Image 1: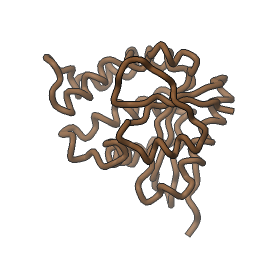
Image 2: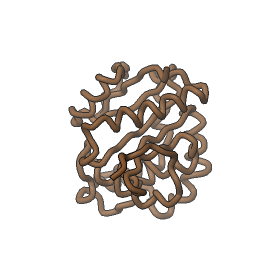
Image 3: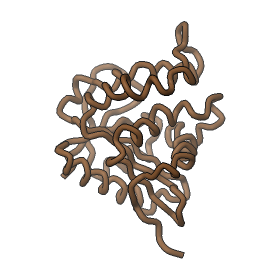
Image 4: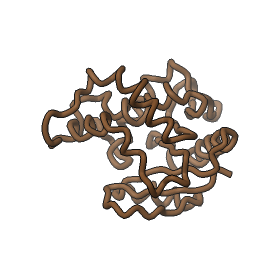
Length: 203
């Protein structure tokens, strides 16, 4: 058996990408039972990145099957514009904006999908890049997350992004400890949120 390898995302990875996103979408745990729409989370946090920033989309491949990924953008403001102008029109009908105040997990995520400007946080202006990383449970704790991130850091740095941020759920203490070990530091954002913003250099 050969060891897993990190490579660029390919279109045939799409089903695995969506599956990984859902299996890790609840503060690192399985989100499949939380959402009626099994494509909603991937259409926010995974698919737009591989469509809009394919050169910054990497997967961990084990025997031809993607078992983890890291996705990002080197320019968050540009990504937000592209998300609204190019990505949202392709999925908006499938995930309509709630007509009233969102109350269910699906409605809250659909509202997030339709407001990509939530990524434009003033305190993050010095961190032009951002990322999402997810690994299936069987591949966690073996160093693959570090390999994926280092691969993306190098690509972001080459693209001219000196610093990168991510958002981690306040409930996901294991992920927070992992990011701390990789040199991420907390970025103070006054607005209370269910996530903490972390940043670091791409060098």
